[in-house]
Image 1 (cartoon, one colour):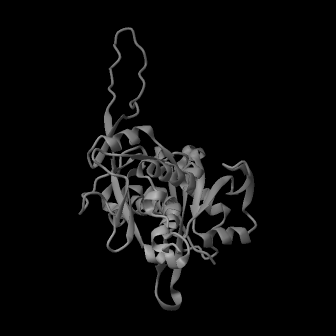
Image 2 (cartoon, one colour; image 1 turned 135 degrees about the vertical axis):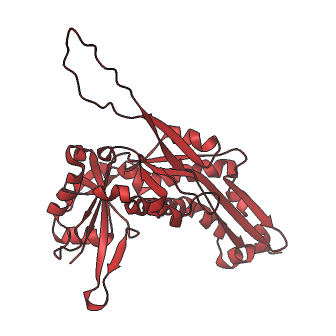
Image 3 (spheres, one colour; image 1 turned 135 degrees about the horizontal axis):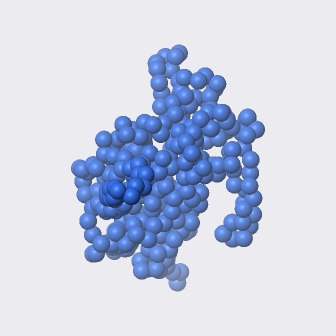
Length: 333
């Protein structure tokens, strides 16, 4: 007697064991993230610890730099002691989740297990979502009035982005510009620079030991993402597309991830009567631009991407030169 395909199909519990699956997703998400590979965002053990300690925001106090003029030494006058002051940076905890389900019948008819396919793609999904979240944060940061001195607006230059424009952008940081190491741009911007024959490639050994080619521009590592801001300015025939390209210092974005108390990162469920398996994944993580504190009050438990993109929710606390992010607004002819 032939076996019933509905009973022989691999079930989600055969493929995914939550205790093993969650660390795998965390590791693979980091491995696939262009932001981590480029060094823009770096894992931060302090943020990891703060995620697990509870609370919806994370306060990070720091000592401000020493100020004041030096004094001429005299034999009849004592030096006037100065003081060191503190400030605090604040990061917002982000709690996100996603669930997927599939019916046994779908797998039986397809000749493969859809839940296995879902499990294989979870890390890629979260890597993409993490990048989208960071782009929302950057939109909010540069919408803040206090970060306008980090914006080079060249949207009136019809010839579009070029090397001189990028150098003018890095100069916004003055003598601190040497901390900038990477650029994030729209693929259309990347293609324009390719047309100018200005993209160079550096050979690097990948995780598997194979050689990979890393695109660079003026020595900056290039990351492309079509989620980069593109704004339509004007109407009708005079309308133009304004693109934003970012310059980053290494480690300017802190990344943390952890498991708060009573938080379940991943679990499975099955509706036996419906013959349906469900995979649930949840993440508690932080993506934070150091020196720009979160001051918003989210409508839900933790901020949405829309709230992260609101400039009113961010306030700069570091000295300007100590924040290694620059935005260049430009056209593509």
